Amino acid sequence: MPFVSIGGVTLHHRYIEAAGSSRAIIFINSLGTDFRIWDEVVAKLSGEIPMLVYDKRGHGLSDIGSGVRSIDDHVDDLLGLIDHFGFGKVVLYGLSVGGLIAQRLYTRHPKCVEALILSDTAHKIGTAESWNTRIATVERDGIEVIADGIMKVWFTPNFHATRAAELAGCRNMLTRQALPGYVGTCMAVRDADLTDAARRIAVPTLCIVGDQDGSTPPDLVRSLAGLIPGARFEVIRDAGHIPCIEQPDALVSLIRDFVASLPEGKPAHG
Image (cartoon, rainbow, N blue to C red; front, side, top):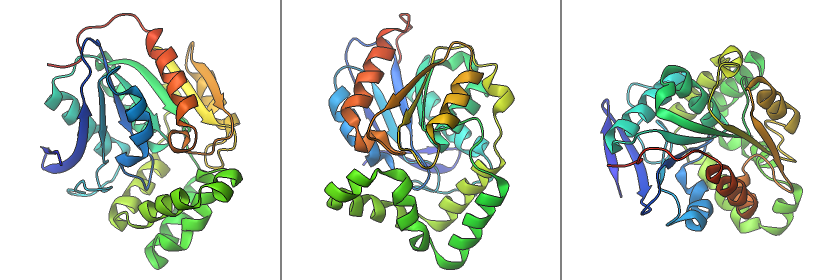
């Protein structure tokens, strides 16, 4: 299992090489998940595009280090990974809080970002009240108490009815995340407002949302796309908050099309 220390934080990651491609995609996962959510997407794109997946600080097998106080903590880790791998410009694919991380990294270091794919995310997610309520609940009773409700916004009713084993596995993934990492990232999302920054994004951007996303609904993601000059907006049918698990074929089709539309860049690795 590959691990690397970034600023004293050990991060679990996986790099998938691809010969002859000019750019890498870095996938940044959502709150309460680890990089296994990308397994189907990575399998379908393997050999076509260099890809990096990793567990955010405080998630999966990665350390929490000194904690999570803001989106910038996650951005620092990602910048360290980009430097570690010697990437030139990269494509950032951010899901949910991963989309906030991607937007914030672009704000801080626009020259290292060739393009953005912002999936099931927004410029601002939720309200201080909603996040404080969630934080208080899980600090008192644990993640388990909110797990069933989270599954309802992550996945469609059809997924619940027909893919019970996968649903149970995803629920296990959520409830087994380290509480400090989960709570700290909730606080980071609560405090992040990238509305003004989104208006200054000047790289090709694709905004994607599941048509039944109960966490960042289509209208919210459409509003993000409306802030970003020239952004493309796409809805994936029969998907909730995590299309990479529920509809990987449709998602991969959008990724391929978007990457093919980008100008040729410098070598992404080495």
